[in-house]
Image (cartoon, rainbow, N blue to C red; front, side):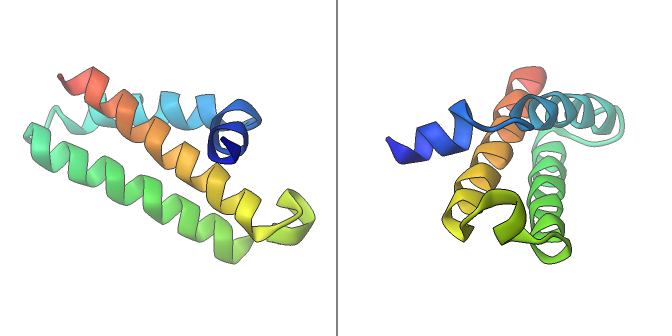
Length: 88
């Protein structure tokens, strides 16, 4: 239950990731097939979270690293699900 609470319900930036995942899928799909587009969306979502992990002060922003992991997982899942909705 903590995963859903921290990863989705208290995730301030989730809807931004959902929007950008769908937008990226729509834009990339003009040049690539569906499978390739999904791979690109997943890569970009994971790369963004890795960048955020190494470039941000995680304890100051999230309090604990587990809160960041749940938040990042929610962001990645949201972007992937929206890309799936857009493509299929």
